[in-house]
Image (cartoon, rainbow, N blue to C red):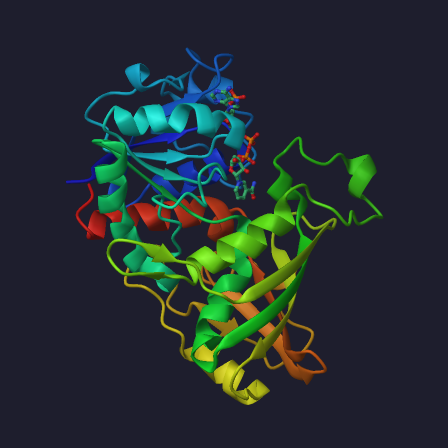
Length: 344
Ligand SMILES: NC(=O)c1ccc[n+]([C@@H]2O[C@H](COP(=O)([O-])OP(=O)(O)OC[C@H]3O[C@@H](n4cnc5c(N)ncnc54)[C@H](OP(=O)(O)O)[C@@H]3O)[C@@H](O)[C@H]2O)c1
């Protein structure tokens, strides 16, 4: 029987992607939708300015949106996917966990907390058991798992593939799509014919979240990876798909051919939303490109290319779909991992 799930922040950009991924889904069934007070009480069709590239599923369109409050969500809902602004998530997500709901969240609040698992299932699925520590420490009947920032998800799987060579320093520059800022994030006057060399707090997220994702968990405590990561983030006028330029220095010598092989062979996960091939590696140095390659693996694959030796170690480019692999798809995948590991 399908697990009954809800979406917090269901009317937003990521919320709409979540609905696309969850209806239909073989393991989950949408049973609750929440948004702000201004949407509460309306049908989803009335409340959401639907911009996804497929129609609103009929059963979802007629559902009533409720306020984002644990008292408004049916108690037989087991799992909540949260795509709330982080300022809102910080205030309301813990209340849902206290009330017994398991939350798979996109919002950045709490991602670096010692007892909150930050998970990409293909990279660090074992960190999910940090939930045992979380329940002991917080006394929650529910639980909270986070997925990383969209630009962190893009390059960390490629680093995980190279980890056996001993990661020492990583420099990454991002070229991020406008959808990453939400619908109202960047105006057309700001971004057309332009690039913006700053995205608030983004560099810090890449630099810290990557160390947590690549860290080790011994069943009681999580130790951050000691790789040094430096990031520089740019907004560019693409709609979807974050492209990143990465320089990696490793303890052991690593040729471009070895790096390509390690990325190609890096395993995917045995979960419904995991792509068959996690990292697609191109020989053509002009790929990956956002418009051409962001939907590989239903938007859940990472792609890489242009692998070469440089003055600062190995250099390559990588790409991921920011609202699929980087947001909604990442949360759904964590929901599938929670189910597989008996947390639902
Ligand atoms: N876009 C991306 O690529 C991306 C990638 C990774 C992570 N994220 C993260 O995902 C989250 C959502 O991003 P988004 O782009 O989907 O944002 P968005 O389009 O602005 O949607 C925000 C959602 O939250 C609801 N909301 C706003 N204020 C609220 C309040 N006070 N109480 C309850 N609900 C409230 C909105 O409801 P109303 O419609 O009623 O206002 C809407 O459903 C953010 O934390 C963002 O940082 C986004």
